[in-house]
Picture 1 (cartoon, rainbow over the protein chains, first blue to last red):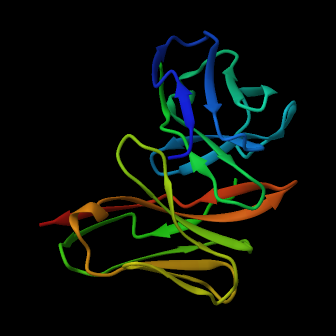
Picture 2 (picture 1 turned 90 degrees about the horizontal axis):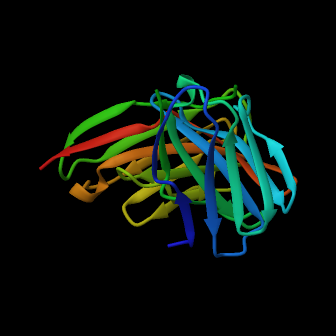
Picture 3 (picture 1 turned 180 degrees about the vertical axis):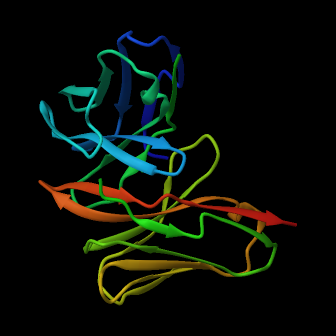
Length: 111
Length: 113
């Protein structure tokens, strides 16, 4: 298995609070991605990174920000969580033109 | 946003039966991918297709990249209990070397022993 961990694995938070999810890799892959998975929508790309401090938006980026200060860590932040952000969040990594490997996911519930 | 249309949404079959699912898009993709997701885990790549018309097999799995580059199908032959899970198609675009994937809604496969 690719060395990808996500933390926390489960989180319950209240509307309006900030939340940060962490993705950590031990593979030294250049590209990292954040997705959310909701019933009926498959996985949708939130943000991705193509290098340290280099990030770009995906198709559902509103309400989310990311940071990548070192190769191994990619952080996803919800500045003020809303109930619509209740979801399962997956991190993925890849090398250029190679397959993406997915982490185990973080289940986030916003009450 | 962009989304692929994957069908069927769910399948209930008997062990040993063959399975077929497909994906269509209004956009052209240069690569089509098929993933499987088990409960509580992230998706795992099954098959990647890189050329229009390509037919690729991986054990009991066979997938094809449609000639128009807007569709793909996945077949599973002689299903077994470990085939249970959710199958996703994905179309890939390369942006600055990063793979931007657009996923279908998934096909949930249930097998009756």
